[in-house]
Length: 293
Length: 249
Ligand code: SF4
Ligand code: SF4
Ligand code: SF4
Image: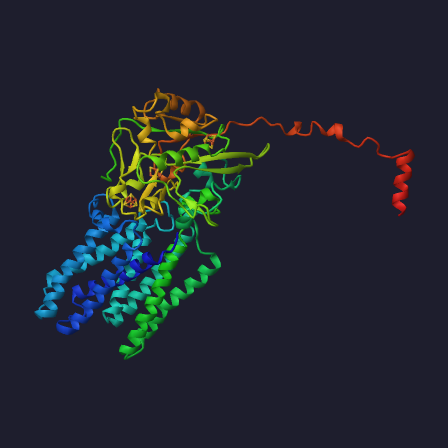
């Protein structure tokens, strides 16, 4: 799949933002007043900024409100509802914490739950697609959720919890790659089932339907080469998970190390998300003779 | 609405004969022509006369080479457009309700004035049957020429999809696949019509007829060879002298 910057920014940063809102809603840290203001400003900048970035990949963003209508069947529509509800509920909670010095515990819990559900709905937009076997596995929501929660803990300054969650998220990340690498083969879809002709190995794409490129080739067919993807996986693991954990467990780690951990995590997160798209093989590539399976 | 109808009164669709298709791309062009001038936004081209042309098409013809265990290899031309699936994943993922499947005839359509161009439906289609138009930012797909098949302003013989009407080989057939007695259903039954990617669970309405087994002609392939064999293995006379003279040089 084409790793579009707008979608990478959207899923990475809104995931972080909602992860932070989750912890703030649960009262970790139990901030009020101006400190709370700074925390909420960061959380909303990430969550709302990410959502706005996603609008950049729409062909007709002026009709975006229509995306609220099909929540019965569409995960994208559900995401639209859940994100707005999470942001509104947490806005009430944040307002009281910042300006009235009170934390409305129950409202916070509801906001936290909605934040978590928002990330889950985002993950299901990808996880539901049978056409991309690498994504169509139960670990996809687990992967995106653990990353978002771990990142949220890190931003919320919950050092020990963050270190443990990052280690957990790293394990899920590796498992997601492992299962993903065999997913296309396991899906049973290949050029023989795609065309109904021959058996795998006895059929070969001879001539493409067009000499130039098209929407399908640009959007679905390109995947990153194996050699590069291995290197990028190491970079994502090191920066996104390994280094932040080390920085967090250094005794007496202060704000400077904490900030370094955040920067490193974000760099690793974006790399991981780039790979999430760039490694994903859409089955339509089979018609173009592009997936050897 | 993006909820799929529990059942449709008709299942209009295409039957494509892979045995007969000669890969001429006439259906591609007639489709592009009709659908640029009629239903919805035109199918745009980008950089049409430049170095890197690309454009929106609703029908594309691939070609595949099949090597059977025995006998000669075969070239199969493979036209591909929307299969108007019964369990269309492209419809249920749509957040706006722009994508829908008609209850009356099963045609899958896009209401372009509600489409935000998010592209998710194209992600959900395993067959690459949807293309986001680069100019209009809305999703384009085969409409089964919904503006021809019911169009009383057209002569009766033209009330079928443009690709079917134009195919010079008669490789494309249009009809109701929900009616077991229709011509297309009988064709499918007779020729062993098949689904593409049945494991994706989309239940396509369009069917493909496999190529008929080919007669093995490999032993006849060099019928002219005996006539072309060298006449004189050992040149004599003038040719023999020339041969020797040249050898010495
Ligand atoms: S072929 Fe693709 S676009 Fe057409 S109905 Fe099936 S899934 Fe949808
Ligand atoms: S591109 Fe248009 S038709 Fe397709 S899912 Fe998005 S809104 Fe629906
Ligand atoms: S017009 Fe007919 S013969 Fe020509 S490519 Fe299309 S289906 Fe095949």
